[in-house]
Amino acid sequence: MNERPQQIPEVREPLPQVERAPLIAGNWKMNLDHLQAIAFVQKLSWGLKDVGHNYGEVEVAVFPPFTDLRSVQTLLAADKLSLSLGAQDVSPHESGAYTGDVSARMLAKLDVRYVLVGHSERRGGHGESPELVGEKARAAHAAGLVPVICVGETADDLEQHGAAAIPLAQLESALATLPSDAEFVVAYEPVWAIGSGQAATADQAEEVARALRESLRDLRGDDRAAATRILYGGSVSSQNVAGFLRQPNVDGALVGGASLKVDEFTRIVQFRKHVTAG
Ligand code: PEP
Image (cartoon, rainbow, N blue to C red; front, side):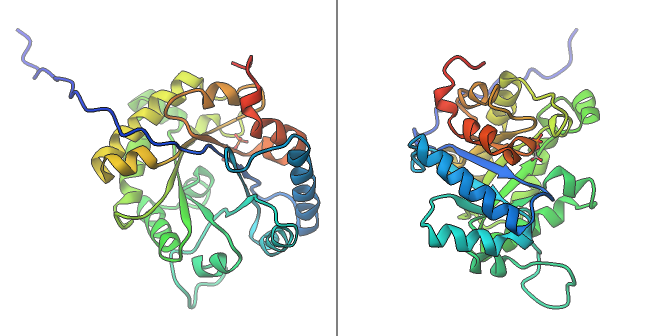
């Protein structure tokens, strides 16, 4: 006799139909000094102008190192460029004796719109706890920034728990201290796919993105779940980006290595033109 309780799958109403403008975000990590950053952003904006890119249809954001932000902000303002600016990290504190930290208010003063929290290179390399990730998201929101909450499983997690369990737990924990009205973006980045050249398949990305959106319904309600953009990240290239963006729950890409090559990043931004790409 099978004594296990039967799991009856919950049938849910479809989410409200909401247009989510795709976001293509370039995480430069610790690359490009401020002079290189200026040259890069100029070249990127010229390239996108040449192909008639519509920033209202596909948002493009760059996430330079802290030392470049002022230079890039000045260029964006002077040339009236529609690129969005993001930062790679933020202090959970407002101000004070926190040597080396940069506050969310300082970033907001530089017209920074987005900030990454919980990137695996900070969770792993800097030992950032789930609670700290949540505190950073809260601090970002309090200063008017939009946190990009990065979640993802390691290869070991994948083997032990499957793909979705860890990202779901990380998302729940990051949202625990974030006010219920806060806007945020979720970036699903399997750790094994970051910088490895071995991207997830589009189906794998969709499966986790869908689970994350379902979880958002419980955590934040249907309207926020329908409006929140969920990005895929991990070895995204111009060859595979269209496959990810074709998935109903994938609303953009967080791009590392390929965002440093201006021609390649320009092609990634134009994912809608890659009609034959897988
Ligand atoms: C990242 O660091 O966020 C990332 C996705 O890197 P890559 O595209 O190089 O895998």
